[in-house]
Length: 265
Image (cartoon, rainbow, N blue to C red; front, side, top):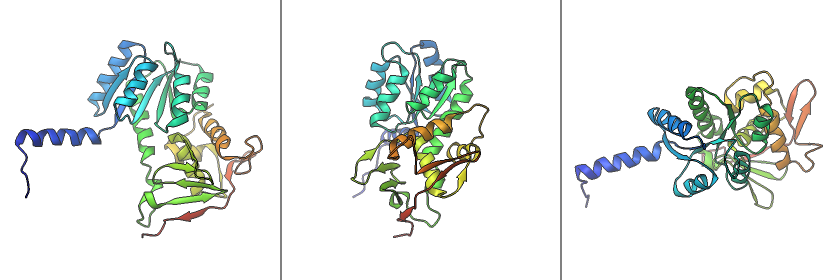
C-alpha cells in the first residue's frame, strides 16, 4: 500500500532533501560583523551556514550539525585557530579554510602545517572566499578519483609500500589497518602521486592536479603539504624514499603501485 503524502508533508520533505544536498559551512570568527556578513553572503549563494564565535561554540556546532567545511579565523579568544585546526585534523579530515592576518606569510605556512586545506588573508573579497570554498568542495568530489572503466570509487584501492589508499572513502590505512587522518589537500596530493608514479611533477603541475590553480610567486602550499604527507607515510621523513625531491625538477613518487577494484565487479 502506497501512502500519499499531504501537500504540506511533501513540501517539507522536499525542503529536507534540498538541505541534505546543500553544503553546510561553519564560519568561526570572533568578529560579529564578519560572521554575519559572511553568513548572509554565503547563504545568498546557495550554501547553508552556521556561525561560531570561539572554539567552544565551534566544537558544539560540529557535534550538533553535519558540517562540510570550516572557515576558521586564526586569531580567536581562548584556543586560537591553529590549535583548533590541529586538534580537528588529529581526528577528522573535515576541510578547513584558514583566515589569516594580511601579509603574515608565516601564519599561512603554519596554518597549512596544522592541516588547513587553504588560506585567505584579511581583508578579502567574500567572492574570493566563495570561490575557495567551492574549489575545496570540488576537490572532495574530484572526478580524478573515479575510475574511467565504470567501477565505483568505493571499490578502488591503491597499495604501495605497505599503505592502502581507499579512494572511494578517501582513507589511508597502514599495513596493520590503522586509519591515518588526511586533510582533503593531503588526500588529493597523495592521489595525484599515486596516479602518476615514477613521473617528475613540479609545483605548477601538482597545484593543477590537486586544486585546479596555478602557482603564485612564493606560494609554498605544495611544499608544506608534501612535508606533512612525508611525516605520515615515510619511515624517515628527513630522508624520504617514497616522495623524492628532484633537484630543479619537482617531486617523484617512487613506490610500485598495486591497484584493485578497477574492473567492474
